[in-house]
Image 1 (cartoon, rainbow, N blue to C red):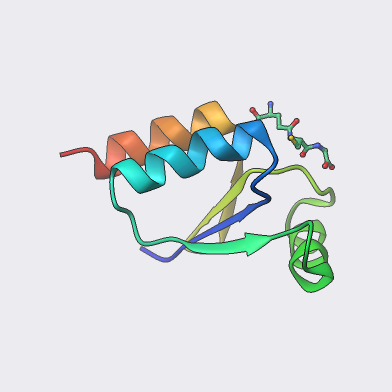
Image 2: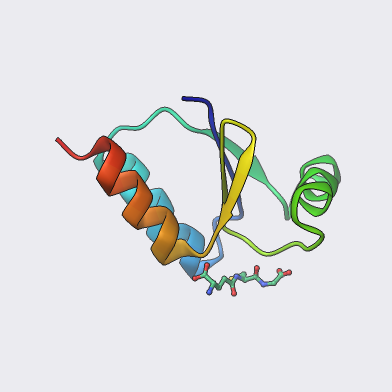
Amino acid sequence: MNLILYQFPECPYCQKVLKVIEELKIDVQLKNTRTSSKDREELIALNGKTQVPCLVIDKKPMLESDDIVAWLRKNYAA
Ligand SMILES: N[C@@H](CCC(=O)N[C@@H](CS)C(=O)NCC(=O)O)C(=O)O
């Protein structure tokens, strides 16, 4: 599965998701919407807003950190 996470490290909801990604050692491409205007524009094109975290799973965006964490645990927990 191709996974991309739009985030910025200062966001506590993003930190929650990043912690799980690290814990489960999942290969995810990180995009920073604070430091990269290109990444921010991509996120707006996907969702019409800049809300993070947003996990894109095979081109389909998922918002809400609780939903993202639940999806990661369901699909990647040993
Ligand atoms: N309920 C959301 C809240 C996410 C949230 O509030 N993220 C903030 C950054 S910490 C955000 O995206 N704010 C709006 C914005 O930057 O456009 C979640 O759990 O993912």
